[in-house]
Amino acid sequence: MTDYIGFFKQNNATMFVECLKEGEVLCLTLEGREKLAAEFHKMEHFFRVKLTNGYIALQQRITLLLSSTPQQRYEEFSRLYPDLILQIPKKYVAEYLGVSRETLSRLYTNDNKY
Image 1 (tube, rainbow, N blue to C red):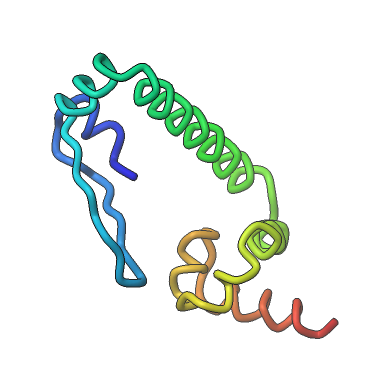
Image 2 (spheres, rainbow, N blue to C red):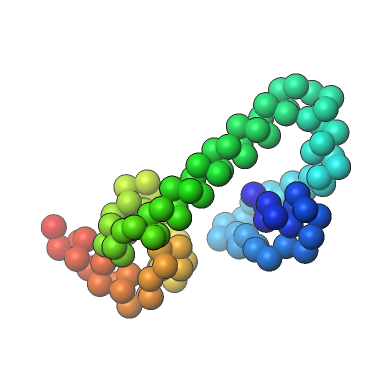
């Protein structure tokens, strides 16, 4: 994960990642990435596939945010990440879905009525 604009244009990042669980962070500079890609065809392929998949996911998320209701976004999130919705604080789920914490509570309550 990275702030791609900051990474590829070598500018300060405007986005950040907040870890909700303990994990390991590996860092790679743009220069290091380019060197790996030039020396190892499989790494160039790996980077291209990861970047393409990330772009597709981003486009799908933007489309969902612009063309769906909060209920539809909540249902899609629940479908894609059934375990996450129970593991992470509702505050972060609400932020991801672009709704208030109160709206998320209503969606969550409606979902559990059935």
